[in-house]
Length: 203
Image 1 (spheres, rainbow, N blue to C red):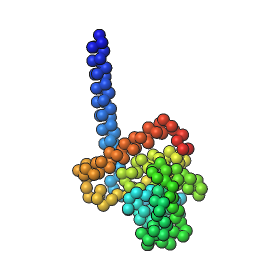
Image 2 (cartoon, rainbow, N blue to C red):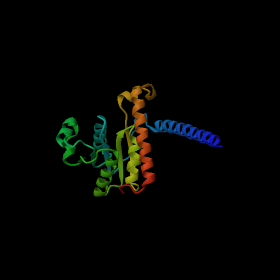
Image 3 (cartoon, one colour):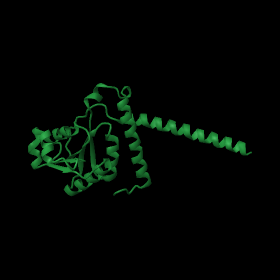
Image 4 (cartoon, rainbow, N blue to C red):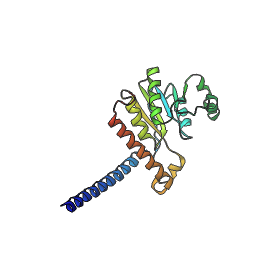
């Protein structure tokens, strides 16, 4: 009887492992399918723009939106503490004039969760009701769930930035892109689990 019970426990364990593996794999392909692969055109205005640092093309794209008057103010969140506004301005010489009126820089956020916290503080401080969110396309799903969790009453408009390399290559044919997507998927799942276990996180 003990042998039979052990055998059934083994079968059940194997079944759980197989179902879990299939679910995770299917979830990954669903997640990858959600990642934007084409640039979007923003044809509407928001109160402000938020760019999450981390990739070179994000900040210039955010400034282009600001210059096009898609938002009245820009938050650059997650900037290294040693990086000053002057250094950022030097990297964006066409947009220097905006630093004196319309740009705020956050040095506090160390990750996406911190980006969302600082965005919430900034948006409430300025009484904004709508934001354009600028970040890399592969980062957008997790950024949006973090921001939506912190700002459930605001309208959030995603503006995914797509690198030139990702425009030219199919992600599943690039081992580096596959590793990036898998890592981001696991972080996305962790965020979902965190919200489920503690829905009032930092709110």
